[in-house]
Image 1 (cartoon, helix red, strand yellow):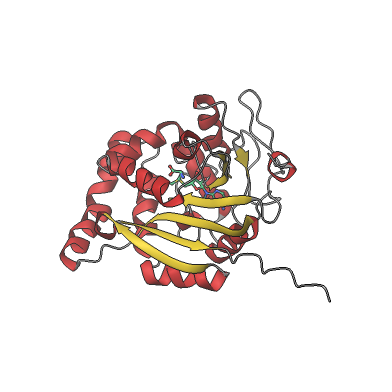
Image 2 (cartoon, rainbow, N blue to C red):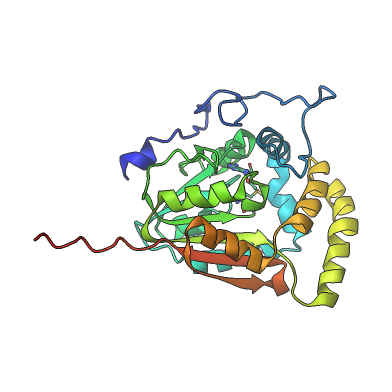
Length: 280
Ligand SMILES: C[S@@+](CC[C@H](N)C(=O)[O-])C[C@H]1O[C@@H](n2cnc3c(N)ncnc32)[C@H](O)[C@@H]1O
């Protein structure tokens, strides 16, 4: 593994090391609860996605995050993750960055294929739960808009259900490009917009009406799932996100819909290194 990867602060199972202090990059300090204006913890981020609010909200869903996902997606999340693994196509010994990896569930398929996967996230609550379950994974604390990795480090960078939560989408897309090696690839898995109008109507009803009560029954923080519904509705559609990828410098951008567009997989490539000029 390169020094660039190992140099990043990793989270250990006993006493997590925190790479930066509170406020330095929007990453909350260890075990701190972020007060809101009522002096309570932030359990639901607003749509302007303040990093400290987003991190705090995920800290509060961490314990039951994976169970809630399974229930709310009616088990579809497992199929979506298989499709992500196929799209990334990680080979043994390749270096894969799984950004906004949360508890590391999205990282496991890459590890199984023999790649060296680095799960990176800025919610220490999510990272801690992940470290307890999969202590061998190199969980790394880091902000998607200021990644703690050197240029051209990874063969592939991927982010599942994370980009929508990052306050500055374009900065994250540029950072992902920076840490990808020339010729390397990106795969983004994110909720999107169903393409068939009648299905889109039913799905939007599910999101706004049925999902919050179901979340109340299974989640440790049901408020967060109101944010989930609102942030999905607010997210750019497939062509718009493809345009953002191109604007950030990614090439050969394309996307594929899963479950009728409930989820979309976007991919892109970093330009290969231009051939060295012949010396005269
Ligand atoms: C819905 S979870 C997805 C977790 C995992 N990728 C999965 O598929 O289950 C979104 C994650 O994005 C993380 N996140 C949001 N904004 C981030 C940022 N700016 N930098 C790093 N992680 C971020 C949150 O902390 C959270 O763990």
